[in-house]
Length: 535
Image (cartoon, rainbow, N blue to C red):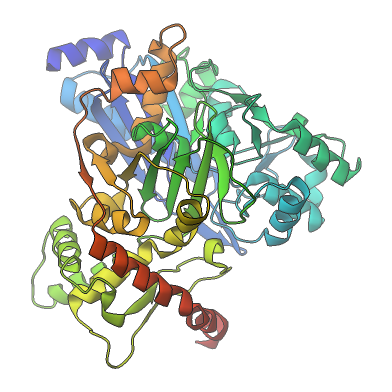
């Protein structure tokens, strides 16, 4: 097998996927059968500068170069080959946000990421104008908020794109974007597979000729999965691999957002399928059979990489507070000179949570490190509270932090499941919450009262998902849809495990969520009363 892979590497028949996530940039190299054969990674963190969550362009390129170098080193270590040729490349990144460039390609203001919740005025106005949900993190909300704030840079905008679109542009020279990522910039017309022309006209009328540009002129060209999206230029190759080994000319698939790669990585592009990605943030997506009956501010409408309509509930907070408590327990154990393996520690604590009271014994927690628009909070305060007679045990403590990590998500999903009565045939879980077998699945199944599966490949995440989309570009047959390609060539015979919802778990989560909603005034008081300047 090693010699076979070595031959693939030398002949340039592998496929590379790179995803810029919120805490890690990851690269995965795959073989002819979509199996990962090497990987690389780079850890990074967003920073809060002048009230804006951002990453600098230096962060982006240093991170990409370090990640690629780590991958190339892994290839050489495993197979004795210096990586020079690749069959195709796919790039993906965090969706949404705001990257505005002038005519010379210079970034006009620091990158504003999806995490910023400062566009409420714009998002509300555009939702009303379009009769279509425009979340705060969408690029168009950031653009209109900058206009409302009379920011001077707006008149100089020549190009507006996402992080994935930016990196792809610099590597290929092409100002394009996959339809899934594009659907987080501006609404997509699923009939045309392009930005909604009616709404673009409404936006231009709203501006009434104030700027020299029309909206369509500054947005990327929208592409479907499998369409050609350019080739790696000499300059792009040098940007990605400063060593000079990587050869130019490699085809790239349309750049996608992390939502689209999550769908590809979990085979969730068909109607009535869905997936949950649970890590630093959490989102659930379901591919719809038809449009929703009305506009919901907390339900996003995006698309699959092939352009089908998807309902998405996106929450800013998931496992950060949970991780902080596990770190505290690890610190406690270190006082006794005990240093358990971190995965084992997570496993023991998560498994213990399954033995707790189904409703968490009266304990209540909020995991809001950042604001949570789904539940109406522009700021967050991680919070744990209990009544004196609550059942305060470690099992209940861990269970409440697992349930609250999905509390905001359940609030949104209940609209889809209980009010819109959408049907889900399969829901796939991926991300850090599902690393411990069964536990995250059981909690998610209880939250949604739906079966939840985790596949062996799900651990590879979005970098593998965009590699699959790049493989589709390279290997698809005439007329073969993405759904057909995934079913026949990627996931045929794939192994996984499905957890059915347990009736007692479901009832317990419902009891918890009633207390969760009733306790919002507590979280609101914490936001209003506990600020940095009061410490």
